[in-house]
Length: 416
Length: 165
Image (tube, rainbow over all chains, first blue to last red; front, side, top):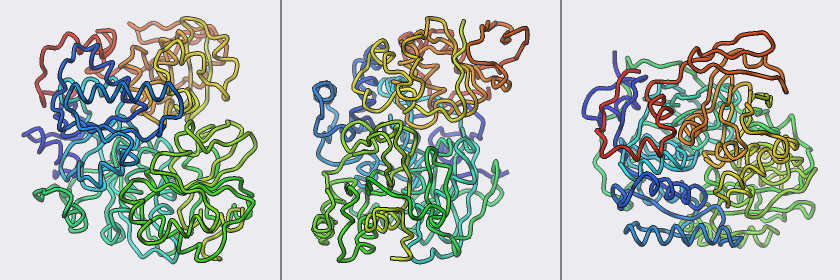
């Protein structure tokens, strides 16, 4: 029996053949901590008797959830982490770079075949580069900081084969919302989602990141796209890496197979209050909105902003809706700035914020009042995720968000 | 032990909303537990009470503040039909015992419950339900009293020496 890409990565890093279901103490190639989960991880590391982190160069630190510090408590947490970074010789990207997951990707810190952990559930996004990446809690992270390794139960994989060409103004976010609808919020618990097929091969890193980012919304431990030319080209100028042969064998064993044809896919909208409640946009068109948020680790990249700007064209956003646009990172911000997108958004009436998690954090700013309705390109529409538990959140693609912001109500991007 | 009953897909934003993640102390986090989704919980929960839930308890964010808030509230056992992966690991790490019981939905809110860990049996209203065993490698952490205590006793580790448990 052959091996899946996930089994191959663990075999590669363990130096012996291992299979799904085995529990191994595997070495970790990178560990990411941010301003929310970092302070607890550091305290746990110290309480475990940790003095020096396993390898300061493999620890990635940055702040993105509450930046610039929105309270004294947040400022204290960040000051505490800064001091730790200085003591340990960890390179701290601080508040400068943007959302952790986007920054890890664009700095090339998650390479094909590596095992990366992050104290944040959307760490699974790095699977877009062919790494095995998973979110862990703060105590597990404390353990990683001390030992540079962690217990992993090697997951079985669900193979998702996607073929066809996306129709006009339909893309990766619509695909992953449709997949989440089918697999459900817990349908992939303790498993990995392996994305393959001609649609994925033709997809840029931005779309692959959107897909892998939302693997956790189905309970998955990881999402992964086998590395190919698109992957290796992405690393050019970011980090020198050696290609690894980790593609799944044709006779690899999967927990299940699913196939999708995107030729007829409609724009998808996840309705409150669960991510797996996706419906075609037609079913919710006309829903009045108070706020539209375009951004997050799921959809805050240049390509997402360009998609929103293309839909917007030279029109104005509706006065009846608050439009908040946040590039995912400084790099993406600069790209959008140089392309004139930021000027376009601001002219159209949007509030453009500096790179950070924004309303998706549900604490820093952009919160919703009871009874309000938000449409968001982020990844979670849980009750209370963006403020009041009596508010409603809908999730969609950047194209659908921009179209809806034009009219102040959920709008089919193919009709504007 | 009183049962606090919850449904399916209880996410960690519901357990502890994002705006309280600036806090790190269990007793402080506990005062905000389930704010907005189960308003009577934080005020009425007593030490030793048990949370019983449906499928996918603790889904969403990896915030360890969620199990910490429940620890602060005095909860030591959570029984659910299934758990989200990160929450399950986090619960064990901080010293909460997550028990999988497929008939958890038959246990009513407010019920008096007793849990026999050795026999892996829950008794409630004259009925008995069995719980699934915790995986071996996590049992070692539970026995140590959580991952911090487990790790404190480790001088060094050997990587890739796992077993098929």
